[in-house]
Amino acid sequence: MQAKSVKNQILSRIYGRGRGWAFSPNDFKPDFTRWEISNSLEDLTNEGKIRRLVRGLYDYPLYSKILEKFVAPDMEQVAHALARKYAWRIQPSGETALNYLGLSNQIESKYLYFSDGKSKKYDILGQELEFKHHAFRDAAILDTNTILVIQAIKAIGEENITPTFLQKLSAKFSASEWLKIQKSGANTTEWIYQIISNIVNELSINND
Image 1 (spheres, one colour):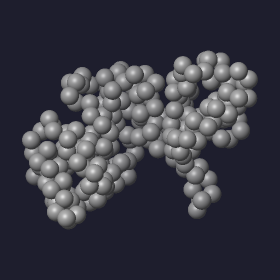
Image 2: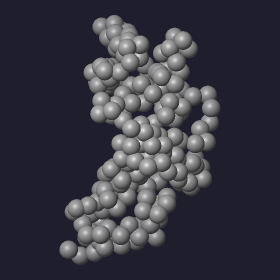
Image 3: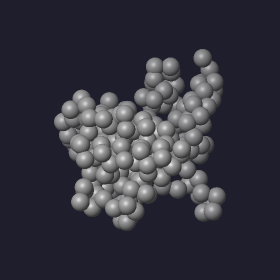
Image 4: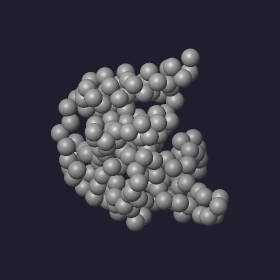
């Protein structure tokens, strides 16, 4: 297989994921050799088609037409790229989940995840990404949307849930996505599951 052909195939996969996707060389195994992947990613970085975030981690950078430049990495994508690379299971902290959902009043300076891997900190182009070791139960690992919703609700706290918060939260996903979240989160804490179910019921009434 010619090196140019490999580079084009890898680039096509990157483009197919869309801007903001973060990845490591592991994401291209076992289809290509380590040498092919390393050289292709180095060439693509030098050509400005991808961006190196830290050693062994890259992204297909988001671009702002208004600012006419690449913008900060999508930290959720970065966290999941590292999780894939090291075979970690991860969950965002409550504040990080609120930030991703656009429900936090604070500007996030640090992104915190719980991981069944070792505790570690990364400087991602000036943004801090931290993983704290946590022993997950098997049932604790859910799909991404469900994890975000549960962690965000938990961070707010049962006594602080307001109609305004629920309205903003419900607008983050479609009715079909909420049904999936309800099914996936069936074993979560009862009061959190009740909030999710209330949102599903409200959306169902409004769509009738």
